[in-house]
Image (cartoon, rainbow, N blue to C red; front, top):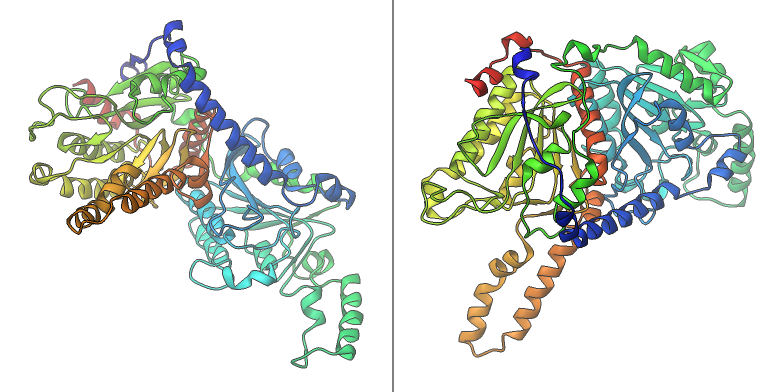
Amino acid sequence: MHRYFKNMDVLGKSLKDKVRDRNRDSAEALQKQEAEIREAKEQTRQFGLSGEKINSRGQLTIWQRLEILVDEGTWRPLHTLYNPADNSDCTTNVVDGLAKINGRWAVVIGFDNKYLAGAWVPGQPENILRVTDLAKRLNLPLIWVVNCSGVKLPEQEKFYAGRRCSGTTFYRHAELEQMGIPILAGIYGTNPAGGGYQAASPTILFAHQNCNIAVGGAGIVSGMSPKGYFDTQSAQELIDAAQKHQASPPGTVDIHCDETGFFRFVFDKEEEVLAAMREYMKKLPAYELDFFRVDEPQKPALPADDLYTLLPANPKRTYVFEEILARLVDAGHHMEFRPDYGPEVYTGIVKINGLAFGCIGNRQGLLPKGYPEYADYPGIGGKLYRQGLIKINEFVTLCARDRLPVIWFQDTSGVDVGNQAEKAELLGLGQSLIYSIQQTDLPMMLVTLRKGSAAAHYLLGGPTANRQNAFTLGTAATEIYVMHGETAAVAAYTRRLIKDQQAGKPLEPTIEKMNELVEKYHETSRPLFCAKTGLLDEVADLNEIRGYLEAFAESAYQNPRSICPQHNMILPRIIRG
């Protein structure tokens, strides 16, 4: 297959200075937005006790632990700004992402011991479910750094019980293990109640000598027999019992190493726990990536910083998608699928670190005259039409056949609408695409370059494709909404305007409501909001996108559940004819 994969067409051309000058304001706007996002991330990271305070207690912070655990330069954080319960502390109290450990990719997550000793807080269960879904989709080891003091008791009703509650994690761990996905846990500090199950449910437990895990902690054991009320006598009894149990808490290393044997390994130093986990990564299932490579790994031929010039901050301005792609894939190489059909979307094979992927992206700008063929109006890039939907259906089906993971680049204003579009079967073709995606059983990654809008956001590899979508990345230019705010205001208030006018009422109050809706749509569609509410799994700087593509690419091929021999692939042959 060398004549297919080592003889690809080349995308992109070098930027001229006049183009950089013309787009300088847009580039500066994107960089300003990125700076604000980085600041928000840093505030979340710094929340809680200082690192100095944690270190003075003889402990490392979660960030210090991760720095030792993961290979340098490979940390790809996810859910940094995720806060779906709108906690005042702006955190779900876990830190997670993709990273290499001893040369192999893993899904890594740990409790932030700088806040309430790593307690369960509202929103955390949803975060953890996303992480276990990621390990399941990529078939990667799940690596936990456990330091969990249990439930934040004053807010237990927000996350303790229910179908997607904190306890769901333990069933998810069992599900991963039943699928053959190992879970390693390094255990620190005091882990009672839910923290105890959190520590015990992984596959292999690596313990620090000062840790403990238990069904109930010292505080619970001290108050096992309340009278139904408290008085001075019972308060003194609680004090005496608590002091006793704090001196010798339940579930220490002596119990769970020497007696139960739950702890496979115990270490004197924190660093030794992490070193042992790193060493154990060598023992877990993984292919050498050369097994799947179709070419030697190559960097993009053109610089990533060009993306600030090429991707307009203004969502109404157009750009050439292929120029974006040229800065992200190996050497700008690609093989386009059906270039003469469905011009509103790009479909083709690209390489990331020498590994082959299907790639789908929205094109922008005016489409060729006479397109779409079923309508008497011109086609506009960013929208989906009949041919484009058919082409994507074909492409993802062929990717599934050849076991090529798919990377989506989304910048869409929706699906074509109106009676002509209905007669052209766009509603059914959209659902057909959902069916095709669901049939693939392939890892997929989405980069929402700018707009994720209307049903097209679902159709183009969005996070609603739960079984396939590993994670969704956003940029400083990302906007996600059911429709543009101005369009929503028209849809919501046009009838009111007509009624007001017919009744002789002033239009200004309704116009004010329309403008309020436009502003609300703007505020609730921006990158920070999307990251907080989980519409995106992470917002990355434009020059960080390639790093996430590499993490996804190597993760998807590290231990796939099914493979297609390269010489049996049909998609490259269909493209070349």
